[in-house]
Length: 513
Image (cartoon, rainbow, N blue to C red; front, top):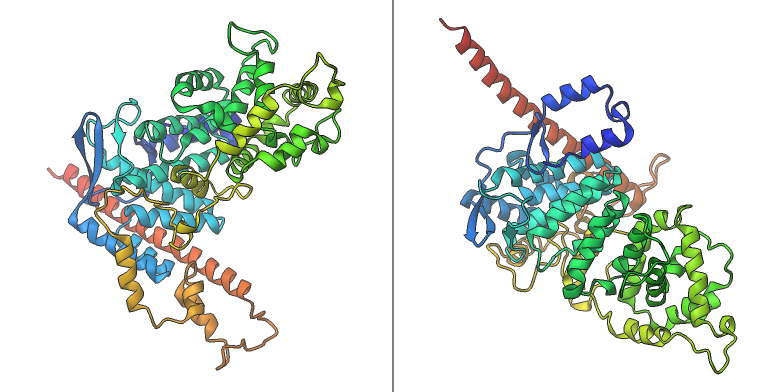
């Protein structure tokens, strides 16, 4: 069981996150521990939710949906196509552990900046999964597998990925790292959400440098991790932070300094992007240099640029820190002497480092369009500096964050496109504006706003109404957030009521002669 609340307490002290040690002990006594998340006492019981798991052999498992759950899932697709979040709330009220409703509504609440409710919905989804685990399934032993190609399994991958992002925002980097290990182990060969693009961040921020170095050494030969900017740059950083002598070579292994210099020659776009967050002291006009200026423009593909932007967005605070930045500056200066003719004052005996041209060719040829698993990572990460670069064939269909870019070889028990087509035919007469806004707003709020408009659709002007689309969006979004909170409160109240009935029944039985 992973405990990010305990990690917060160790980092900041119990008073910061919830009061005294006595308070924390009382709180934990009221919370049951699950394999993935703690079980809150206000949550409904996971009884007959229609989700189970069965073994497939050779350490592989799959989730199973009951017939009742399958009917709920089809209702979910209908609600999704209706583009009315209130319909999703209705499904959740009747079925508080329906996975995709929890994931979709969690995403909506996160975008409304209601992270408390959004995170709670994510944790409920994880609790539903952990309640369905087969007795022999232990995700922490590293040998249990879930096939991402199976439609019924993908919700757990998505829920874990998004939960990692949320707890890391709270500073729980060690817990985030452990969840990363778990997520990577579920489909170790394919890594369908490309956990390897972020595991280095949590390893370094939680000071698990040896783990990261060992992971790189074990996988680099088979997966060419050195071509990923995050590993190319984070491995020398981890070696530096673990205390290796920066200039000492170990056999055929580069020194820490040489390793960083090699990464800078391979990924010069890292420096140009880092300059947006900090200044490189003692070095001027980097953008006019061959490597950090011209080469970035001429040889960096869009895909490589996106990976570098993602890395810098996640790691720039550490690279800009006082104990790292001077080391980086020293090695940038060394690289300039290796690749810049003006710095070398070339004579017949001096040549430019051959890696300048060799790595330029690599950057041009080794980073084509992203495979789906990297696109899934970018879609779920939602890093504004690194939006996913989607090919044209993917831009014509909706992409849902509860199941982004299903594999072509997906093993389905549902056909979402067929469900959407059927609902679209039913809704063919709906107005364009209403349908557009309903993609993220409750229909009642939209209809109420449209009622304020004149016969031609023009807004009726008043002193207190702007009549702007932005005003409609804000008002309706706030209304939906409040509605969803009420739904969750009703579910919790219903749960407490059932528990009280059970307690009263037990007490009366105890008192009977």
